[in-house]
Length: 355
Image (cartoon, rainbow, N blue to C red; front, side, top):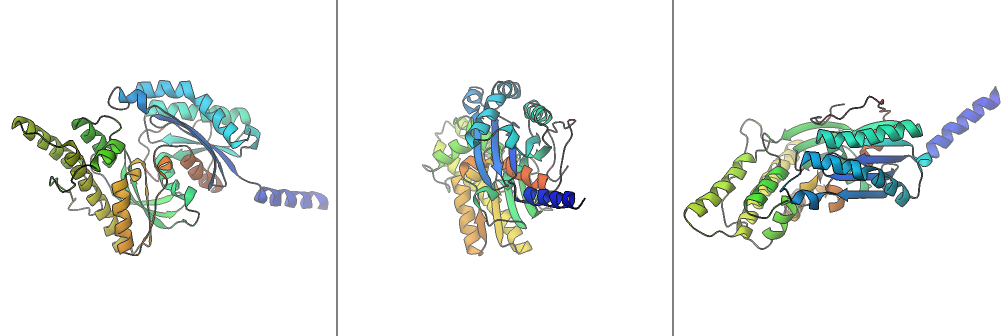
C-alpha cells in the first residue's frame, strides 16, 4: 500500500515536470493553420495555408470558398505542424481549436478536425476564443508579460479595448459601435482602387502620401468615451471621392490612404491612452491583424513612451490569424481545467469572455 502511494506521488511529480504540448487548429476565416505550442510560451511549429490570393479575385473573403479550401488543406496543415515540431500525436497533451467567433462554415472545419483527432488519439479537447488567441499572441515573444494589463484588439471583425485581469479573464471597456477598424481599411482600400487585403496595401501606399492632406473626421461616442465608430469615417472617404469625381477633380490615392489611416490611428491611440490614464495602467499590448500596421505601432509607441507605459506587440506573423496564438490561449485554458466534449460546436458570434 505504501509503495503505491510513493508511486502515485512520483507520478504527480513526473506530471509536474512534463512539458505540456498543445496541438492547435485555427480556421475562423481564410487561413488554415495548425501549430504545436510548448508550455504556453514556446512555438515548436506554426504552419499557415493562406487563401489571400484566391479571395483577392473577388475583392474579399467568400465564405463558401473559404470553407471548401479549409477542407482541402486541414489534414495537410496539421500533419505539417506535427512534422515541423518533430512530434507525434502520442506526444501531444491536448488539442486546442478556435470555435468562435468567425465564419460558421470555416469554423466548423477546424472544430470537426479537432474533435476527430481528440477522439481518435484519446486527447483532451479545449475550445478557444479567437480574440483571446489574438491577445495571447503577445505572450509568445514577451516572456515577461503577465496579467494584469490593458490590450487593444484591432482586426477585420473586432475593435475592443480590454482590461486583461488574468489568463482568460477580461473586462471589455470599449468596443466599436459599427464597423471594425480592419473592416474600414478593407472598404476604403476597395474604394480607392487598392483591392484586397486593404490593411497592408493602405499601410504601404500611405508612406507616399500626406497624412494631413485631407481632414477626415475622428468620431467620439459621447456617452461611452472608450467606444469606437468608423462608419462615419468610411462614409467621409467615399463622399470625398464622389465629390472629386462629380467635380472632375483628380485626387491622390496616397493622400486619401494616409489621411484615412491617420484618422483611424488617432482614434485608436486616443481612446487607448484615455484608458491608460484613467486606470493608471503601466503595460499595454496591441493585438489583431491591424496591430501589424506600421503607423499604429509607431503612434502607440510614442504615446506610451510619453506616459512611461511599456508597450507590447507581436511580430506581424502573430498579428494575423495563426494557430500559435490559439495554442498559447489553449494552454492557459487547459491549465485552468477547461475541457470540452465532442458536442463542441462552432459559435460564429461568440463574445469575448463568454464560455
